[in-house]
Length: 265
Image 1 (tube, helix red, strand yellow):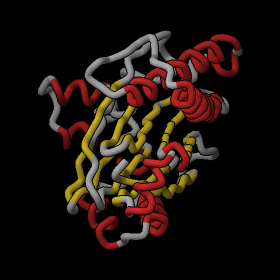
Image 2 (tube, helix red, strand yellow):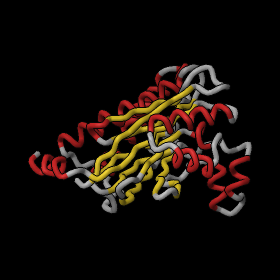
Image 3 (cartoon, one colour):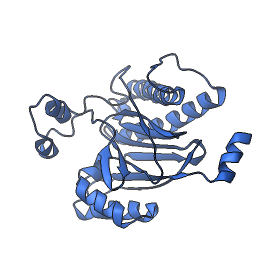
């Protein structure tokens, strides 16, 4: 393995909501980060997002330990990417059944965006409209695709990206965990480079801060913990209309001692 990654994260209820339905999980030993943004009545959104991050992490970890190959497998991607996507699909089954078992949780769901540093690349599994970005040489690139009604309209040429960002329909999702028995989970794999930064966030962040301002903040603040704090603070200044969650991970080359340690494992 040529690279290592270090994550920092922050989640905030925002200015308009009474409770935080976002959940995050960072597992440094697995080089894994997950953001989930829950939805549903009562506290069920928070329940759904908590199940998503917990089950995904536990299932992915168990599969990596046993080197299990998922029953659903896409040959275009690595074993670890398929394991991560399968773990999210298992989380979907748990959320779907929990939603049908209790009236208070009826119709609950959540987004889920998960990323691992997989040797020399990022492996991603994603569903919903939380986002994963890559910041490389001060250029911000969205790696995931929003599973939303307005994004479907953008793809069909019915709306521009600018119109979609202001549409009253932008919160309508076409895919999420818990809302369907077997939804599709997107897989992406992108080569990693030294000094890359990856940003995982809920829509409470990117709907409150445009990409130009995100780049400005990240470029001015190299410390990831401080950058998380500044991004959340700025989203709240800009209205804080939703829960705000962000994870930032920085990639570095391993030194020779770390490389030898990996070889000897």
